[in-house]
Length: 429
Image 1 (cartoon, rainbow, N blue to C red):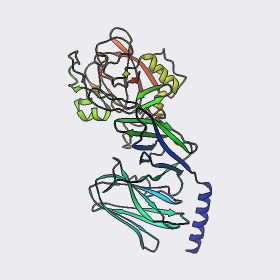
Image 2: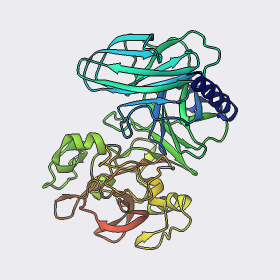
Image 3: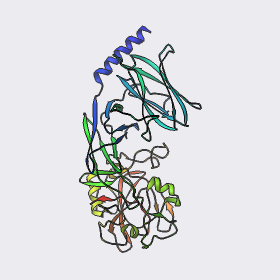
């Protein structure tokens, strides 16, 4: 036991000497100067946290032992080993009373937490426990997880277990009254995606921090005529919607969308849930509201318009200078990967089928594999392709589009039939 404690002290000393200490704060500009909440996703590691807008994110070196069994995403501790505090994240598969218990190596309970939690993913801050090795038990009526935690806290103060948030951003029984510092595991070079919200506003900022900094959210109104609100992202000199348009009344895929004064949309396989997850699919004429003028507002929100073929060129060449904007078909090396959402359907972490080649989402565009309604009226390719219209014609019957692929990192410029149903991303005027 003495050798274990000496080894732990030496390890903690080494960890203290080499640990990162990046503090990230948040501010807002644009249509509002308030940040209500921030969701941070580490696209490289798959971890994430939710903070209040006045909280501080503490990026710490992701070192140490896994929290639970290898591959078990139901419980995580980060950082682990912990210098002062560690965030416990676990999934409660059912609503009910949850017990969190922290025991030392003698089996003595040193911290205990009880609460009634809805089903979902929850995060708790564990802090202030003295140097040592501990077992963390999380249990409900029908589940039990355990993990090992190493604490390197040399001067313990106010030990406790504090609820941070659920995946939906709420806390059990109460809301946080004061700002907090929230730890998140981070390796230099990890791609982070910050999503700030304030009322109806939402802005996405991709970043790879190399030091402490302030993330500035530029909140821009993006609300369609159906009162749906969309996140936005600045990529180079352009501001894009960071989600697919989903406005209008659903009609079945065997019907054409018509100039009847009602915005109509298709939902993949005629399923309303598909529109909620992926946005609507639109024929070109309906999208354009029966105009043929490039850059027209169409069915986009006020202050936004349907991107032209040239504006798509600006975006893709900003991400990958090798893109040939006059070519038809595959072009460039990695513009598609930088636009695509990370993760895979098989892993339960995204909309793309494996292998989702080259997907980094470092642009923050978060392109989904939403599929299409083909010219023969068949829904196809969800999970394999995403298609987005431009407002530029490629002949009387065709219009230009952009499309990434599940098996490639490049991007496709296609001249597709206007009667196809594709997704839409609008661009700010």
